[in-house]
Image 1: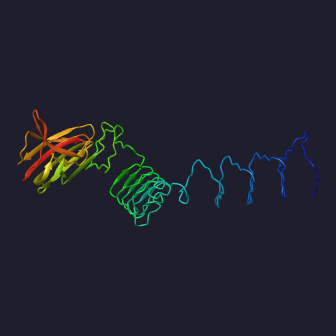
Image 2: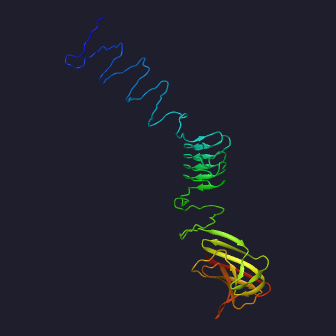
Length: 338
């Protein structure tokens, strides 16, 4: 076999030679510049390809065995497969053997297996925020990022909205603390069916002309006194009741006096809620078994904490009702503004 030792091989015009029968290299080959292959480059027994740069495959990569081990980020426009072994992504809605349906990263991750039944949790960390995690509760519906129930063993709570916090079992919570309005239909025209409306113990006043912002009912034993001095003794079963709707109060009372001690002025009864400034009010009064001059009525002055029992007489103005000894009866009803 002959051996040719040359530095450079060129064709007749000085360009690269054409080797139309191919080249067989029996050992390592080194190329100092770019290598272009018009046909197919076939590796029959290559076990590794080591590239310090980027490998670009224009029509795809087919891996027959062994899988792909990627240290960095893998970017793809789509994924095809079961996704059963993927982590850190939402795999859609899933339902377990205990009829718990969840969808979203971490949603329902706090369930105690076999102890939580019939729950539906949708949204990132729904029911599993790290606080008040749903672990053993049944029949809850939680929708929204970081939406939570009121307790680990919550029952039949419906909680909807980002960061919404369930309030009690067998209840519905719509929205988080920042929500200021709830619309029933987009035109606010839906009819709401409910057994009752509960307002907060302390009124949250609203200036809207068509907004009912308070309702309250109450009853008890009236506090009866003299406007100037002296005392009265009440008979059996004195009572009062009131209803407050918005800023209007309807107040009724009945009592009897069985004794007096140096009474001066007129009888007065404490109001359940003080009257508003700038408004006078008057109501009806029935007095039984007491002597008085004129027509009895109830008077409430602005910013008052009591209503007074008075009489009105033509040409004489108002007169006091000062109780006398013996059993006397008083029945009154008045509506006023708070």
